[in-house]
Length: 290
Image 1 (cartoon, rainbow, N blue to C red):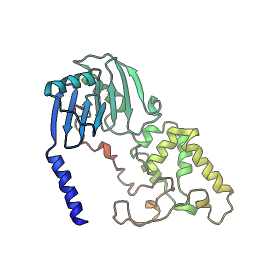
Image 2: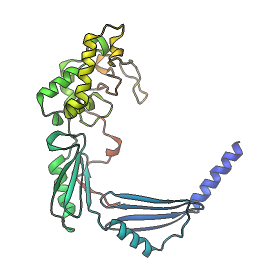
Image 3: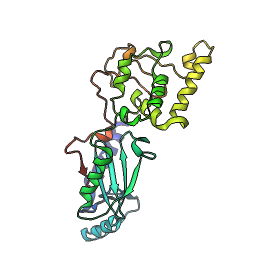
Image 4: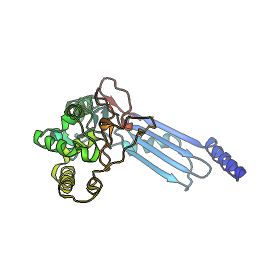
Protein backbone atom coordinates (compact mmCIF):
# COMPACT_ATOMS: atom_id res chain seq x y z
CA UNK A 1 0.00 0.00 0.00
CA UNK A 2 2.82 2.34 0.91
CA UNK A 3 4.61 1.61 -2.36
CA UNK A 4 1.41 2.35 -4.31
CA UNK A 5 1.04 5.73 -2.63
CA UNK A 6 4.65 6.57 -3.41
CA UNK A 7 4.13 5.60 -7.04
CA UNK A 8 1.02 7.79 -7.33
CA UNK A 9 2.89 10.70 -5.77
CA UNK A 10 5.75 10.25 -8.23
CA UNK A 11 3.33 10.17 -11.16
CA UNK A 12 1.61 13.37 -10.01
CA UNK A 13 4.95 15.08 -9.48
CA UNK A 14 6.12 13.94 -12.91
CA UNK A 15 2.95 15.25 -14.58
CA UNK A 16 3.44 18.60 -12.85
CA UNK A 17 7.12 18.67 -13.70
CA UNK A 18 6.51 18.07 -17.39
CA UNK A 19 3.54 20.41 -17.71
CA UNK A 20 3.88 22.99 -20.44
CA UNK A 21 2.54 26.51 -20.09
CA UNK A 22 1.95 29.56 -22.24
CA UNK A 23 1.34 32.92 -20.54
CA UNK A 24 0.37 36.26 -22.00
CA UNK A 25 -0.36 39.53 -20.23
CA UNK A 26 -1.47 43.04 -21.12
CA UNK A 27 -2.98 46.05 -19.36
CA UNK A 28 -6.36 44.32 -19.77
CA UNK A 29 -5.45 41.17 -17.85
CA UNK A 30 -3.59 37.87 -17.98
CA UNK A 31 -4.13 34.40 -19.48
CA UNK A 32 -2.33 31.17 -18.62
CA UNK A 33 -2.59 27.96 -20.67
CA UNK A 34 -1.32 24.72 -19.19
CA UNK A 35 -0.96 21.28 -20.75
CA UNK A 36 0.12 18.28 -18.71
CA UNK A 37 0.03 14.57 -19.44
CA UNK A 38 -3.74 14.33 -19.25
CA UNK A 39 -5.13 17.82 -18.59
CA UNK A 40 -5.54 21.08 -20.48
CA UNK A 41 -6.51 24.34 -18.76
CA UNK A 42 -7.05 27.93 -19.76
CA UNK A 43 -7.20 30.54 -16.98
CA UNK A 44 -7.86 34.19 -17.76
CA UNK A 45 -8.24 37.03 -15.26
CA UNK A 46 -9.23 40.52 -16.42
CA UNK A 47 -8.26 43.77 -14.73
CA UNK A 48 -11.77 44.22 -13.31
CA UNK A 49 -11.44 40.94 -11.41
CA UNK A 50 -13.58 38.84 -13.78
CA UNK A 51 -12.21 35.33 -14.18
CA UNK A 52 -12.71 32.35 -16.45
CA UNK A 53 -11.34 28.82 -16.32
CA UNK A 54 -12.01 26.19 -18.96
CA UNK A 55 -10.46 22.87 -19.80
CA UNK A 56 -10.14 19.41 -18.38
CA UNK A 57 -9.26 16.04 -19.89
CA UNK A 58 -10.11 17.13 -23.43
CA UNK A 59 -6.52 17.67 -24.54
CA UNK A 60 -5.76 20.49 -26.95
CA UNK A 61 -2.50 21.88 -28.31
CA UNK A 62 -1.12 24.87 -26.49
CA UNK A 63 -1.66 28.16 -28.32
CA UNK A 64 1.16 30.32 -29.51
CA UNK A 65 1.85 33.52 -27.60
CA UNK A 66 0.13 35.44 -30.38
CA UNK A 67 -2.97 33.23 -30.14
CA UNK A 68 -2.91 33.67 -26.37
CA UNK A 69 -2.94 37.45 -26.78
CA UNK A 70 -5.85 37.25 -29.21
CA UNK A 71 -7.82 35.19 -26.67
CA UNK A 72 -6.93 37.64 -23.89
CA UNK A 73 -8.07 40.63 -25.95
CA UNK A 74 -11.33 38.87 -26.75
CA UNK A 75 -12.13 37.85 -23.19
CA UNK A 76 -11.14 41.11 -21.53
CA UNK A 77 -12.12 43.64 -24.19
CA UNK A 78 -15.05 44.90 -22.08
CA UNK A 79 -13.20 44.89 -18.75
CA UNK A 80 -13.39 48.02 -16.66
CA UNK A 81 -11.32 48.81 -13.56
CA UNK A 82 -11.34 47.32 -10.10
CA UNK A 83 -10.01 49.10 -7.03
CA UNK A 84 -9.92 47.82 -3.45
CA UNK A 85 -8.63 48.73 -0.04
CA UNK A 86 -9.25 47.55 3.51
CA UNK A 87 -12.67 49.19 3.58
CA UNK A 88 -14.10 47.58 0.42
CA UNK A 89 -13.93 47.53 -3.36
CA UNK A 90 -15.31 49.30 -6.42
CA UNK A 91 -15.62 48.18 -10.03
CA UNK A 92 -16.35 50.60 -12.86
CA UNK A 93 -17.50 49.16 -16.18
CA UNK A 94 -16.69 50.66 -19.55
CA UNK A 95 -20.24 52.00 -19.81
CA UNK A 96 -19.52 54.13 -16.74
CA UNK A 97 -21.61 52.12 -14.27
CA UNK A 98 -19.91 51.49 -10.96
CA UNK A 99 -20.63 49.12 -8.10
CA UNK A 100 -18.99 49.57 -4.72
CA UNK A 101 -19.20 47.25 -1.73
CA UNK A 102 -18.00 48.31 1.70
CA UNK A 103 -16.91 45.62 4.14
CA UNK A 104 -19.63 44.93 6.70
CA UNK A 105 -22.11 47.41 5.18
CA UNK A 106 -25.41 45.90 4.04
CA UNK A 107 -28.02 48.65 4.19
CA UNK A 108 -26.32 51.50 6.07
CA UNK A 109 -25.11 54.77 4.59
CA UNK A 110 -27.23 54.41 1.45
CA UNK A 111 -26.22 50.86 0.50
CA UNK A 112 -28.87 48.63 -1.07
CA UNK A 113 -28.31 44.93 -0.39
CA UNK A 114 -24.67 45.63 0.25
CA UNK A 115 -24.06 47.65 -2.91
CA UNK A 116 -23.64 51.28 -3.87
CA UNK A 117 -24.46 51.81 -7.54
CA UNK A 118 -24.16 54.80 -9.84
CA UNK A 119 -22.60 56.11 -13.01
CA UNK A 120 -19.46 58.04 -13.70
CA UNK A 121 -17.53 58.99 -16.79
CA UNK A 122 -15.32 56.21 -18.11
CA UNK A 123 -12.01 57.34 -19.49
CA UNK A 124 -9.28 54.81 -20.19
CA UNK A 125 -6.65 57.29 -19.05
CA UNK A 126 -8.28 58.59 -15.85
CA UNK A 127 -10.93 56.10 -14.71
CA UNK A 128 -8.40 53.98 -12.85
CA UNK A 129 -7.68 56.81 -10.42
CA UNK A 130 -11.27 58.06 -10.37
CA UNK A 131 -12.48 54.60 -9.43
CA UNK A 132 -10.11 54.57 -6.47
CA UNK A 133 -11.28 58.05 -5.51
CA UNK A 134 -14.88 56.82 -5.65
CA UNK A 135 -14.00 53.92 -3.36
CA UNK A 136 -12.49 56.25 -0.75
CA UNK A 137 -15.46 58.59 -1.10
CA UNK A 138 -18.00 55.83 -0.46
CA UNK A 139 -16.20 53.37 1.82
CA UNK A 140 -13.32 55.37 3.24
CA UNK A 141 -10.03 53.65 3.98
CA UNK A 142 -10.89 51.77 7.19
CA UNK A 143 -13.48 48.98 7.62
CA UNK A 144 -16.86 50.18 8.91
CA UNK A 145 -17.51 49.71 12.62
CA UNK A 146 -20.68 48.55 14.34
CA UNK A 147 -21.29 52.18 15.29
CA UNK A 148 -21.01 53.20 11.61
CA UNK A 149 -23.66 50.77 10.38
CA UNK A 150 -26.12 51.09 13.26
CA UNK A 151 -27.61 54.39 12.16
CA UNK A 152 -30.95 54.13 13.96
CA UNK A 153 -30.32 54.53 17.69
CA UNK A 154 -33.69 53.01 18.62
CA UNK A 155 -33.00 49.85 16.61
CA UNK A 156 -29.45 49.69 17.97
CA UNK A 157 -30.74 49.88 21.54
CA UNK A 158 -33.22 47.10 20.85
CA UNK A 159 -30.54 44.91 19.24
CA UNK A 160 -28.26 45.43 22.23
CA UNK A 161 -31.11 44.63 24.60
CA UNK A 162 -31.72 41.29 22.90
CA UNK A 163 -28.08 40.36 22.39
CA UNK A 164 -26.79 41.56 25.76
CA UNK A 165 -26.60 38.34 27.80
CA UNK A 166 -28.54 37.67 30.95
CA UNK A 167 -27.06 35.75 33.84
CA UNK A 168 -29.62 32.98 33.42
CA UNK A 169 -28.18 31.80 30.11
CA UNK A 170 -24.63 32.97 29.49
CA UNK A 171 -23.24 35.46 31.91
CA UNK A 172 -23.61 39.21 32.12
CA UNK A 173 -21.86 42.02 30.31
CA UNK A 174 -21.19 45.43 31.73
CA UNK A 175 -22.20 48.61 29.91
CA UNK A 176 -18.58 49.38 29.06
CA UNK A 177 -18.30 46.03 27.27
CA UNK A 178 -21.25 46.94 25.08
CA UNK A 179 -19.76 50.36 24.38
CA UNK A 180 -16.49 48.82 23.21
CA UNK A 181 -18.37 46.48 20.87
CA UNK A 182 -19.59 49.46 18.87
CA UNK A 183 -16.02 50.33 17.87
CA UNK A 184 -15.25 46.87 16.46
CA UNK A 185 -15.47 46.09 12.77
CA UNK A 186 -19.01 45.50 11.54
CA UNK A 187 -17.82 42.59 9.40
CA UNK A 188 -17.09 39.92 11.99
CA UNK A 189 -18.87 36.67 11.10
CA UNK A 190 -19.48 34.44 14.08
CA UNK A 191 -19.00 37.19 16.68
CA UNK A 192 -21.29 39.40 18.71
CA UNK A 193 -19.99 42.38 16.70
CA UNK A 194 -21.26 40.86 13.48
CA UNK A 195 -24.50 39.84 15.16
CA UNK A 196 -25.29 43.37 16.32
CA UNK A 197 -24.36 44.92 12.96
CA UNK A 198 -26.59 42.39 11.17
CA UNK A 199 -29.41 43.02 13.62
CA UNK A 200 -29.16 46.77 12.96
CA UNK A 201 -29.03 46.45 9.18
CA UNK A 202 -31.23 43.47 8.37
CA UNK A 203 -34.01 44.57 10.67
CA UNK A 204 -37.51 43.22 10.99
CA UNK A 205 -37.34 40.41 8.46
CA UNK A 206 -34.18 38.77 9.72
CA UNK A 207 -32.02 39.09 12.81
CA UNK A 208 -34.16 41.51 14.80
CA UNK A 209 -37.24 39.33 14.36
CA UNK A 210 -35.21 36.25 15.30
CA UNK A 211 -34.01 37.79 18.55
CA UNK A 212 -37.46 39.04 19.50
CA UNK A 213 -38.78 35.51 19.02
CA UNK A 214 -36.03 34.02 21.20
CA UNK A 215 -36.64 36.44 24.06
CA UNK A 216 -40.41 36.05 23.85
CA UNK A 217 -39.78 32.33 24.14
CA UNK A 218 -37.58 32.85 27.18
CA UNK A 219 -40.18 35.05 28.89
CA UNK A 220 -42.91 32.43 28.57
CA UNK A 221 -40.84 29.25 28.85
CA UNK A 222 -41.53 26.80 31.67
CA UNK A 223 -39.10 24.05 30.60
CA UNK A 224 -36.28 22.86 32.80
CA UNK A 225 -33.66 24.38 30.51
CA UNK A 226 -35.27 27.38 28.82
CA UNK A 227 -31.96 28.71 27.53
CA UNK A 228 -31.51 25.62 25.38
CA UNK A 229 -35.19 25.43 24.45
CA UNK A 230 -35.12 29.01 23.19
CA UNK A 231 -31.68 28.57 21.57
CA UNK A 232 -29.97 30.93 23.99
CA UNK A 233 -27.91 28.22 25.65
CA UNK A 234 -24.18 27.90 25.00
CA UNK A 235 -21.44 25.54 26.10
CA UNK A 236 -18.62 27.16 28.03
CA UNK A 237 -15.21 26.21 26.73
CA UNK A 238 -11.86 27.25 28.19
CA UNK A 239 -10.05 26.81 24.88
CA UNK A 240 -10.02 29.46 22.18
CA UNK A 241 -10.57 28.54 18.54
CA UNK A 242 -6.83 28.81 17.90
CA UNK A 243 -6.11 26.27 20.65
CA UNK A 244 -4.84 28.75 23.22
CA UNK A 245 -6.30 28.95 26.72
CA UNK A 246 -8.82 31.62 27.59
CA UNK A 247 -10.64 32.59 30.76
CA UNK A 248 -14.14 31.18 30.85
CA UNK A 249 -15.51 34.16 32.70
CA UNK A 250 -18.49 36.32 31.79
CA UNK A 251 -16.52 38.76 29.69
CA UNK A 252 -15.05 36.00 27.53
CA UNK A 253 -18.09 33.75 27.41
CA UNK A 254 -19.36 32.71 24.01
CA UNK A 255 -22.85 33.82 23.13
CA UNK A 256 -25.68 32.06 21.29
CA UNK A 257 -25.31 28.86 19.33
CA UNK A 258 -26.25 30.66 16.13
CA UNK A 259 -22.56 31.59 15.80
CA UNK A 260 -22.18 34.89 17.74
CA UNK A 261 -19.32 35.05 20.20
CA UNK A 262 -18.45 37.68 22.76
CA UNK A 263 -15.18 39.59 22.34
CA UNK A 264 -12.15 38.06 24.01
CA UNK A 265 -10.61 41.46 24.62
CA UNK A 266 -12.66 44.62 24.55
CA UNK A 267 -10.02 46.83 26.07
CA UNK A 268 -8.35 47.99 22.89
CA UNK A 269 -11.15 47.58 20.39
CA UNK A 270 -9.13 45.29 18.11
CA UNK A 271 -10.86 42.65 16.06
CA UNK A 272 -9.79 40.11 13.54
CA UNK A 273 -9.73 41.03 9.87
CA UNK A 274 -11.27 38.53 7.41
CA UNK A 275 -8.78 36.35 5.64
CA UNK A 276 -9.58 37.81 2.27
CA UNK A 277 -8.56 41.25 3.53
CA UNK A 278 -5.07 40.46 4.73
CA UNK A 279 -3.27 42.76 2.31
CA UNK A 280 -1.27 45.49 4.00
CA UNK A 281 -2.58 49.01 4.01
CA UNK A 282 -0.77 51.51 1.85
CA UNK A 283 -2.28 54.79 0.68
CA UNK A 284 -5.80 53.49 1.07
CA UNK A 285 -6.27 52.43 -2.54
CA UNK A 286 -4.79 50.00 -5.01
CA UNK A 287 -5.79 48.80 -8.43
CA UNK A 288 -5.50 45.09 -9.12
CA UNK A 289 -3.80 44.00 -12.31
CA UNK A 290 -3.41 40.24 -12.28
